[in-house]
Amino acid sequence: IPGDPERLKQVFCNVLDNAAKHGGAGRRITASVTREGEWQVVRIRDFGPGIPEAELPFVKQKFYKGTSKARGSGIGLAVCDEIVGLHGGDFTIANAAGGGTVVTIRLPGPQ
Ligand SMILES: Nc1ncnc2c1ncn2[C@@H]1O[C@H](COP(=O)(O)OP(=O)(O)OP(=O)(O)O)[C@@H](O)[C@H]1O
Ligand SMILES: [Mg+2]
Image 1 (cartoon, protein in one colour):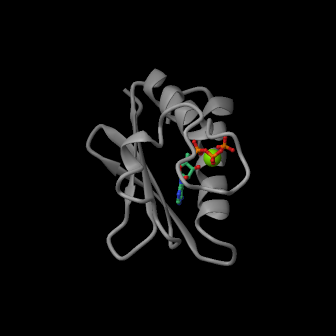
Image 2 (cartoon, helix red, strand yellow; image 1 turned 90 degrees about the vertical axis):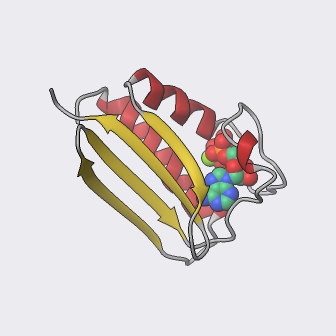
């Protein structure tokens, strides 16, 4: 995947940190990387409580924490969204079918 390795690492660390702290201690986290046409697609899913539907439209805004009482300033997803956007990709977060949260990171593959 072409890109800035340090910034992409920051994205994956932010998302995994969210899965661990918001998804609930001791629960499973799954990650996959697949190729979908021109895109390299990374999906990270947890099996926690998910995000309340009313809060989902706002979670990528800077400093938005919703009803979360977990540590952190609410900046992680805004930074992830910006880094992935600057790589020409897109970053989406949603509730997974069957519970938990799923983050999908699409990045352009090598030319
Ligand atoms: N995997 C998840 N499960 C449940 N809620 C989540 C998950 N990921 C994010 N959220 C919700 O989205 C909010 C914003 O996430 P974001 O990563 O931007 O901030 P944070 O994790 O609270 O703090 P920071 O990333 O700055 O340490 C969280 O406070 C939480 O309410
Ligand atoms: Mg975070």
